View 1 (tube, helix red, strand yellow):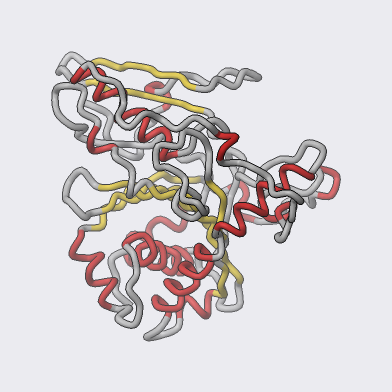
View 2: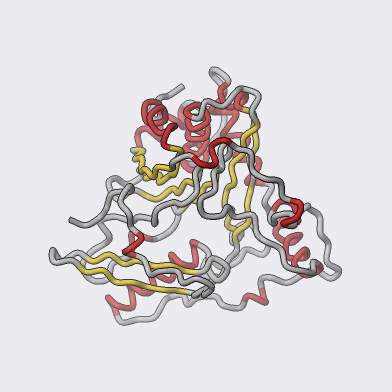
Length: 328
């Protein structure tokens, strides 16, 4: 049997990450006696973001199947994209948003969940359920990503038992290709991702009759603020800032509660991965090593459906499963 369960330990299917050595890309091919093939990959996020890796894999599959190179070819001229203004103009507080404070200023973690057991799970949301969620927000035309994230933000906050006064936020990956001006080619190969941080109180998310709409609005507005102006400011920040800084990406083993982090692969072309024997029967991320981390992936079960991979504290999983399909 192929290990397609999200709770399975998939670490053996991926190339090992060596201590002190940062490889740009590693591929591991795992063949099975049934004829199945699992392709495990690890890549360095500073070199390529999710869309770049999606383009890489689909181009690789096309070359194997057809013997032709990628069309259109990858856009590799990073200096044409990441150009500081003259004069550089830093308009946002990137030092505190995108980077960690100096180590000596960090406070010791006091979160009691820091030692909790974390459980990985996959939840399938069919297209008709997503349509019903959207119908609950008639005043706004919202995307699948926005309404599903809003639903999960509310449901996970409830499962965690957070008080109404608790402030909670979501770290949302934002692709800059379509947001920068001029628009960056979709074939740009590199990392063009920054982060939005929708923030709300649990009371706002749980408001009867309006909590879902509140969450959708907060998510939409936060993502909209990460626009061309924001990306240009970040580029200028990189030009004028000196010294090493550590990005705010959570470390392995971190507990994000009461917050969340989400990546969306809903627009990536993984279903076009055909090496000659048909498309993939499943697409799985490795085990998620951070509590509160979520990944949205197009479902292989149904067009328009979404598989959500997530890591939650084990004590919160039961209540989350009870309510994850509730419309409230």
